[in-house]
Length: 160
Ligand SMILES: [Zn+2]
Image (tube, rainbow, N blue to C red):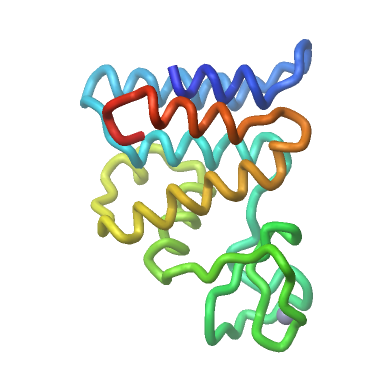
């Protein structure tokens, strides 16, 4: 239900995204076969972002291309990591290393690798927050997705 609501709120009529449709079907089949796993929902959220054109830049500074980071500052506005020498942006999150590794895996689009991941609870918590903020930042203005996410999290007793 959460996945359907997010799709309903974030996609435009008559603009088919066949890859995203396949992702949704694959995730639902896995949940059906193996039971619920929060990483599958995070995968779906990250693939929604990729398909909407907001794939995060996670391997270099989104502004200057540097690969040297003392801290992992992710700029929501720029859609990627920003290095220490580039000016800080207003809307950003400092990512944990394990959360960044999860994000890279999710963005890579390999569901078979994703389903086998065993992640630390702290990394999963930050991942959930990050994807919510990022979706909210880029999709909220058009689609009011934030209220849907919050409403569903309250309405569904299982943590999603
Ligand atoms: Zn930079």
